[in-house]
Image 1 (cartoon, rainbow, N blue to C red):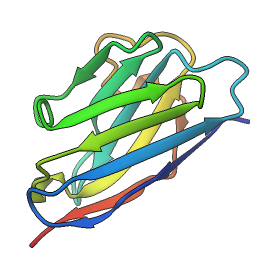
Image 2: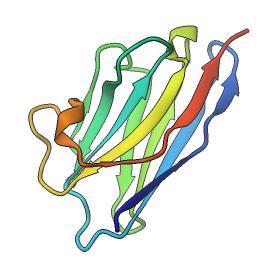
Image 3: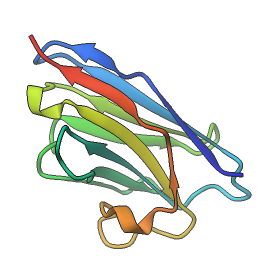
Image 4: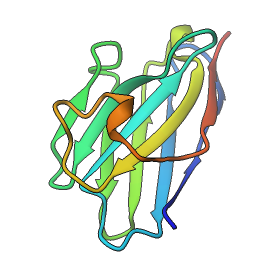
Length: 125
């Protein structure tokens, strides 16, 4: 049974930083593609970053230059470093995984069968 568990969320002031982690368990083989998504109040879930097994990353324009996705395949861990946070980054953040390689930029929800439970990130002064 594949499980993804996020940690590291919380509240921060604008301009601050947070680091999210996602630990993956239950995979027979390591997932080829992993991603971070978020869902703000009243909004649809959106893909913000993805990374292939080899480490190729893609980002949504809204986070490019501020967020960095990385993965440690030996520890089955996915990380999202978030800097220069803005109030509009407030959302529930989810990690996701798929066995096959990323389809396109890896930022669409329908390609991921496995999801974490989500973790709240709040940015306000």
